[in-house]
Length: 298
Image 1: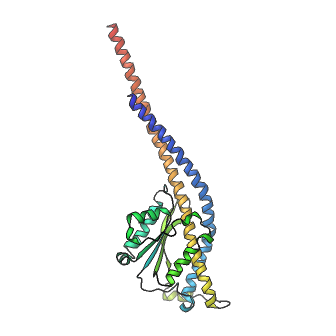
Image 2: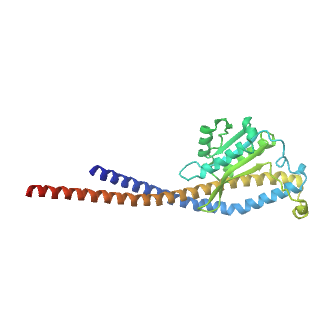
Image 3: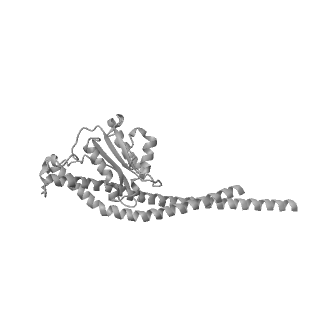
């Protein structure tokens, strides 16, 4: 019985220690989340409006003026950019993004994957570790795994530039990005989007007049679009990173909050078990004393 009490006491100490860690991690994630959330909330409306404008331009202007970024061709080689976090303890956050990437490989691009023509560019250690260990045949491009160390626009802009260049020279025929979409501190979800070629609108016949945009270009259409389209695509890529960054801290804060609550429940159960064991020990000792006294008197 004494050994049992000792075991329960040790477990209580262990749970309390773990709970202190989860509380601290929750507070750290909450502080980081505020900064990350501010960044994506400020940027997202701008990025979405730019993307809307890009789709309109590429859907309603001469393809010769828009460069190669909207050109759809037979998809033989695919690049999938998988944006995950560097650290775990964030619930199913990273797992869901990786599942979205695997779904593309096993579904939309299954033929290319079987032929060995799907390349994966992991950004974040969790995605890199998964594909390196579990899917080594996925042609991993590991040049930008540590991109999350600095998420400023100047620090990341070379990555979308390189992707656009590889699409233009037909190294890849399609580029997809899997990332964490931030909704709020409690809700984040994995999303897979087509990055290149830029998807065009597909209006019905009755909507053609309404969706036809009339743009006036100054100085001239071709020169302006050569600068504008890459700039918009760079901004979109930056948004994917900021979205994932905010989602990571939201997911970790939620996971640590849940872990802290679970520790509370476990502590209640352990303390009940400890009190029961202690009462049993006291009852047993009293019984032994009473029995010994009765034997002496007898």
